[in-house]
Image (cartoon, rainbow, N blue to C red):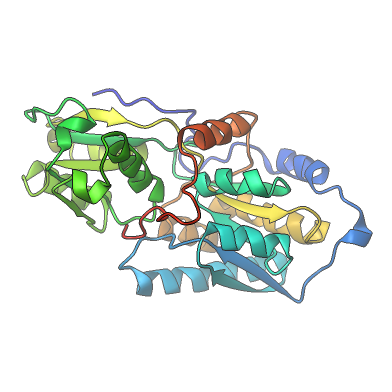
Length: 314
């Protein structure tokens, strides 16, 4: 079973050496010192849950570990502040109410349209740089494309990978219905492995997952994996983005934060954070990042402000 996606990155290996990252950082952050301030507390806004709904206790612990890691790397006290949505994060960053923002990749693509001075500081990677949503069923399923899933039960793992639901929602819209109206039922197992097990045992008829999750399932349970087939997959999405707004933070704070996340896999607490958030590492944006953002804006435009956002049930 062949799965196609964008460029890959080996597990735990960052795309750039620290030296190259710092050189790039010096160029990126070269802004007049007079326009920068070093805050007493680093305020970091998030647009939505990073671990998935139903995992509030686990997420609270993960956020505390992350705050401790940031403190160790930058020497700064910090607050991680959940916001209403990506629009609020971008707006508060532009107003200097937030110093950094964490966006789902497609949200960052949307926010850049209105706030072009938003810049990516680091990308949160789960093995593959640009995640792709793959919808799989059992090989004996008659479904040959997304339309063939109408009325069936589909599992979306509750891992905080919100692009999975976005892909399904937009596919349903092309068939003239909301996701809930198109499918018979949507379930949210806690992990991709649990979702795929439910598919093999007949509890659901399809699962949407990223390639890294499918690769892991193939390694752990090859017999079950061989019972699956892909019916449709998405284009590559941008990964989760840690962003800053031009000239809001001082150069050394940005550099310290960048250095810390890029070296996360080399430190015990950093490895803990990566494990908690299901990541393999952080990377600096590559040359093709702009194209992935542009393709995302073109094919997955943001909903009108009066319309429902991507569901937060995942």
